Length: 208
Image 1 (cartoon, rainbow, N blue to C red):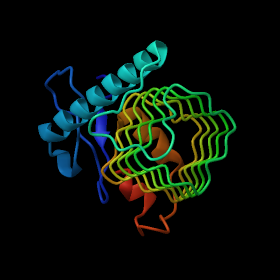
Image 2 (image 1 turned 120 degrees about the vertical axis):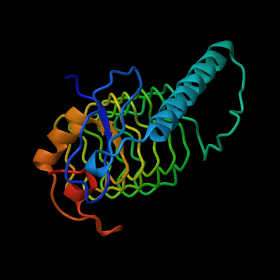
Image 3 (image 1 turned 60 degrees about the horizontal axis):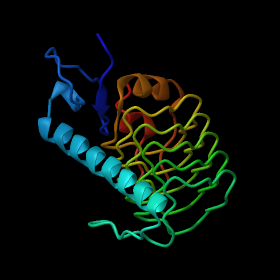
Image 4 (image 1 turned 30 degrees about the horizontal axis):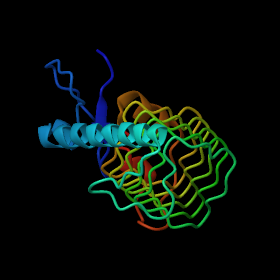
C-alpha cells in the first residue's frame, strides 16, 4: 500500500492507514482514529499557501507591490529569494514567507518562525536548532541533512518534504502532519526530550 501522511501525536503507539483509497492526505491519530477535518484543514492551508506564493511571484515579475490578505508578515518577505548561508539566528521571523526560497546552510538557531511559510523551499543542511517552528507550513520542502535538535515543530504540515539525514534529537513533532515514510525514518533516529515543551521526541512522532 502506498505510504500516506500521518498526524503525529504524543503518546501514539501505532498509525493505521484506512483501506479506502483517496486523493486527499490521510491523517492518523492514536489507535487508528481517522479525522477528515484534519485532512481538510491541511489541504486548505496548503492551497492557500501555494496560491499566495504564485500571487507574490507574479507581482514581483510585474513590479507590483502586493499586501497579502490574511497574512501579517514580520519584516522582509523572502518568497523565492536566495538565502543560502544566511544567518537568521535568534530573529523574530513569525509568519514570514520563505515560500520557494533557497536556504542551503542557512542558520535559524533559536529563531521564532511560528506560523511561517516554507512551502516548496530548499533548506538542506540548514540549522534549526532550538527554533520555534510551530504551525509552520513546510510541505514539499528539502530538509536533507538539516538540524532540528531541540526545535519545536508542533502542528507543522510537512507532507511531501524530504527529511533524509535530518537530526531530530529533542525535537517536538506533536500534531505534525508528515508522510508515513518520513515518520518511520525519523523514528529510527529519534531520541531525547524537548527542553521547552518537555515532550519526548519519539512519543511526539508516534514511534512504536
